[in-house]
Image: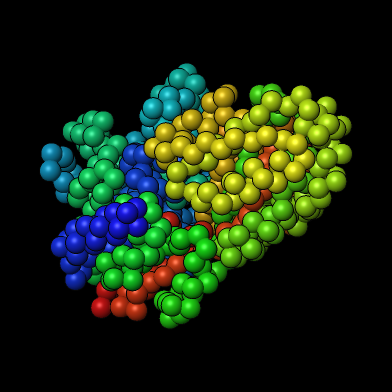
Length: 521
């Protein structure tokens, strides 16, 4: 009966999708709705996947190589001391023409850049969650603290030239600007809070409509500065069930498939040999410890015991059919500089020994611990962790939560062990370290002075060899502290139909793909 009901549901979805498909529309699956579409508060791949196709910053990433390339700035100059960046803006870039928004001047100019970037500088997380994107600019601390409204390091030279002066050299500044989107002030004034769900920018696609838990539709921007996209639009279909997604792809109702049902990877490779693509990725998955809460706070041996108890090879090479590279090294994806550190090998006896030294011999005295994981993730790895920790006497209960509430919940004190992951945009250790281990910023609340000092020093180091040496020191300290159980490193795996051309995918993953480059034949 259950099987019959699932088939009926899938058939209904297929009928709905089929009726909405258009020759020039790309049909693309997403496993969960974005939490919002706010330019200043985007923190997840779900939001970023939509926004990169609607909004733009001064810089962007090449869709294939991941290199930093011009976007709204057609070029830039950097002073010899590495402190002053002069950006030359493109002429003729128009903000989206959308109902309800009236412009005195639709052309994107220097004052729009100033307004958009300055809005990042607030401690009010309901407005911005990313002051770090622009905080390297001199005077940011004073603006962020509310001491002044004048941003000392930002200078408008003329309508098409802006000069940003940093307080100290920062080797990742151009990369940070990729996600510092330029949005028209008129859109916020006209739409208010609706702008968080109806983004307005300069990108190749315009936001069209969004039906929660169903579909989110973008349409081609006829006024795009680099020419109208070949596609008429993109429909993001909410397909939380991977089996349904595979059925939809098989029936031709999805043009791309980026997530596969557990236990079917090899059969999918065989069935869709011509459509299947795979490469090394920049995502790292992990189970995080809340470093500020018992029992993990101030008990490194307990955290290390958990690490030694996990057989990552069994999880990823056997249970998950090679879906990831087992996380037997450190917290960085293997292709990054400073990635080659010693990880935690599976060693059950070592795990038991450390558990006893932590004060919990055979798990005695350790209260049951809840492992939280999000709804769109696979059950199998988390069940495996539960079973593996039981082998050393640790009781784990599993709590699967809806994606819509999970990411706000994991930062709370009651969540002491949780599944998470991080997708880097390019091959630099700061992509992981600065966001997950610096100054207690991530949900683990990891905040170690020695590590913070090293990361601050690396950020200001212009020599790549010296910088890698600093990052390696920080990496070794982090691994010794064991704030994570590293799970695995991603492979970028996907199916794409033969009639879809120029689908660009870098190691950052499909969520970063510039869909406006696609042609549907």
